Image (cartoon, rainbow, N blue to C red; front, side, top):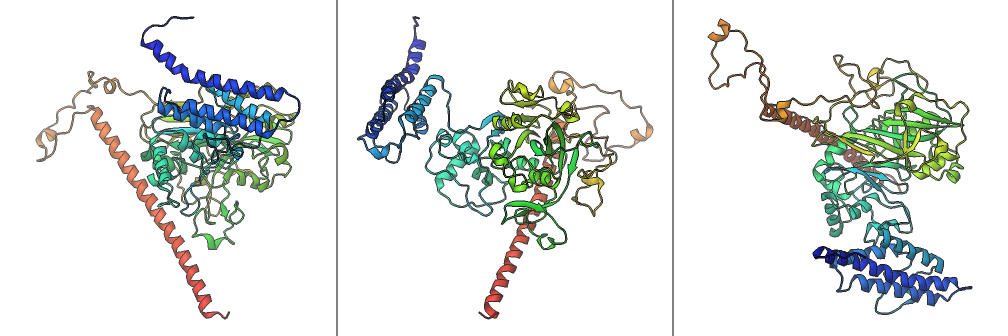
Amino acid sequence: FRICSGSAAMAGSDARKRPKNAQALLGKYLAELRGLISKKGALPRHETAKLIWRTVRSLREHYLSKDSVSKDSGLERWLDAKAMLKELVNWDKFKPEGFMPDSIQNVTEEHAEKVLTRYDNFLVSGNIDTKHRAPEILGETDLVCFIDKPCGFLCQFGGDQTDAPQLSGRIHGATELLNGPTSKIQLHEYLAKKLKTEVTEATRAFWKSGAASTECTCQSCEKCCTYVAGLCHRLDVETTGVVVVAKKLSVFNDLRMAINRKSTSGAKKFYLAITHGKIPEPDEWNGWGSCTIALKWDIEKRMSLRWDDEHDAGNKGLGRDDGGKNETLTYFRPLKYFSGYTLLQLQITTGARHQIRFHCAEMGYPLVGDSKYGAPQKDRAWAGRVALHAYRVELYEPVTGNYLKAVAPLPPDLLKILLQLPACDDALDLRGAKEEGHLQTREDHPQLGSFFQKAKGSTFSCEGSGVVSPPWPCPSYEASQSTFSTPPPWQRHTSQEVASQISPPPPTLPRRRHPSSPAPPVSPPPPWLLHPSLTPPVSPPAPWSPAAAATPPLPGTATPPPAGSHTAGSDNRRVQRLRAAVKRRRQIKEDSRVLHLSFLVKRRRMIERLRGEFHSMFLPM
């Protein structure tokens, strides 16, 4: 018993008043329901339904009463209650004025007690025990957010044409989505209802407009950012892991370009996969192998197929989603062997649909659970999903140049698959595992070994570098080829499967390392840039020469600064000019590519339309 004085005691009692009353109110009905359950035999449905209806009506009156501390907070708590009690109540038919049997779902007393107990725990602890796992925020800045996508969530850009992204019907909050009947939840819808950013506010405004189609399909502008709540890339429905989300409309295009960039200045995306078979450890490029098999997207089969220059010559003008050629590059290395299985680490430079699944199948090592690409159908019974996880994403923030790194620990369902794999007798410490150190997991399983460690603390880091998208090291290239590993594109002939547009690195550049190695340390700035009171060091003046003294400066030109002089303002202006020039160059290149692709698509459609008109006019019926 404490005696509090002043306004602090009044504010504390008001803040605790409603949750305590709601908890006591719910406890009263829970005790009554448990008393009914303790009786032997089945209870009349009418009696149980009326008890649930009285419980919900009392909670509604309590949250929306005039005695509430805040009208907005009371309404928010009532919406949370509706989301968590969705399994018991049909809200379309619920009427607080009178009891209607159809307004209560046909559930057992035990299930009703379980749902109400879950809501009671939420009132006590504030933790929501939902039916489906909620996406977790791994880390965020003012511009970018990294989300850990669970299995079952959908990433959709609104279809191949102009259809607006789908929604889940009459659902008011993110919690209600997680307690819905299906785990196939649209990730953009959950983010728009959960987060409060500039992008999500624009997305909710687009929903209110009731538009059934989109005005743009470039997937890079601010309008397209609004349609998908800032999602910068996609993952398959059963693939878990890191997803990059834009919080500001102005950075969406830069993030999309960084993720899709096929050069060393793009984002680094690392995946973990469990494959069938034992993949040999490559000898080249510090233990990394590569696969550059070109692919095409089959619209009818909804899967990627191998590109054949001879048979697919007629599809060269099509886009990447219409059956055109996709140049791809995937690096991989084994981390751990099991009996008949391999834990594989991959890094993709390109981002084609099903790229990892296709490349692993082409090499003869399909992913566990991926029956679409050659894995046994029985995998679905014991694995339950495709064993693919987006483990880590590293990129440079568009405006600030900070180096961001987000890690998504291995989820429990993937750990369950690993626990079912038989151990390997010759499971030695591979080179990739030594360089990686350890893998972070959601749960602690000592039987898997010290290589798997439960994540402690934050898995997100932000390092201020002050440099906008500097190139990081790439693999060393002097190595021999293997049966399934190919050298980088800039060391291959044009007749091989490689993107001919990729130019070799300049010979003057220093030797580069693999993308998995850490970024080179950045030297600290000079002290006079951090402290204006200090002056930069000035080198001694150059010796006098008659030629220099006899040559006066031209009219209208400024006298050059002395040798060794240096100012922060000149550097800042130079960096700004370089940034603007690079941005203009990228925008011009992207606009020309989009116009060229749109022209090819329109020309193909026109040809098909004219061909159909010709057949209808001249061919006999």
